[in-house]
Image (cartoon, rainbow, N blue to C red):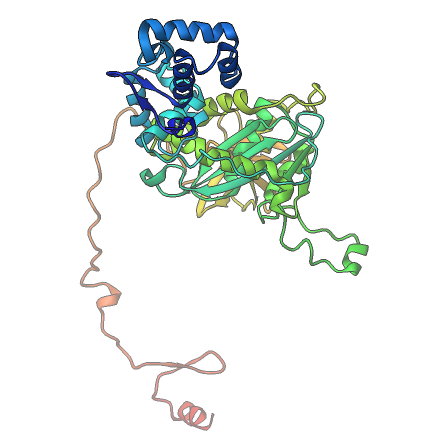
Length: 464
């Protein structure tokens, strides 16, 4: 058998000794050396070894035969090998709780939840040996694209968007996750779940940004009607020359009061960082919500703060300029009156305003009803926690439900209830019960009454 054919497969030798292709080639050459057909120098050139190494192999073959060419660690378990119990756990999690997770994410969750330290490459080998297909095993081919340079300061530009997705898989209906990401660092600044994409979700995210970081310089959004009025492109040149402007949306009004510059993006590629954020969260957040056993929207929102901290520690980068561009947020009470839903109402004559088919009155700090001028403007504020308040003449007031009845002072002793009134019956001699004593009369033009007996008046009424 030629040396090339001996290198194709593992060559069985005496008993349970196996040689690989490289060792099989050495065996063929060393047999020629032992038979005297090759010299030590010739064997050294053929095997690419030093003459000293060839002499060592020759002495080993004389003492132990072909077993001297086999690696001494063959059949032994390495000290750094993954224990079988850990391997079984990785395979079990890859099929159940961590199904669909990337190898890097699996390594992070194993260290966090099970205190098992494995590299992503090791996890990839374990699940591949078990025949488990990982959708993240192969990297996508690199695409050449001209990416916009990051902003130099944190807080200079914030990208905001929402993503409808089955975040809780089959445990709950489809929800929309509202979020914002900083352009300079890639930090998640806020996340909030809502049944649909709406104004409340974006206000919650804006509240998290202002409360945890400050007021950013600019906000970058798509053209949704929550952000921009659909009529803003319908103004004619004459209207623009006259100075007419389309009214801001309710979200745009909040940004205007906070002094945030509002910018509209013209394509999804323009706000690429927040679009790529959804791709990452749809892989990572779904799995972590599954591990936490979360099945309701309220539980998911309570889980988000801890997830945001871990995400930012893992993926955030340092900005070119370490000085942030955030402005200090206003005091908490003023911030609550700014980031909320606002509706204008007119006061009625009884100092009452109507909201959602209910009537309310304004109250001061002492709980007394505030008198309102008829038809005066009142701004009703619906806060993010569901509570309501009002602004009147620039001052904040509380709201109480108006029932339409005045409160009566209670007595120490309760009076006995009065029996129900009986229906009224007139007496027998009541005028209602008396018969008519004379015929029906008609009124004449001069105010006299006709009794039906005078022929003169009968003639007059007949002619008229």
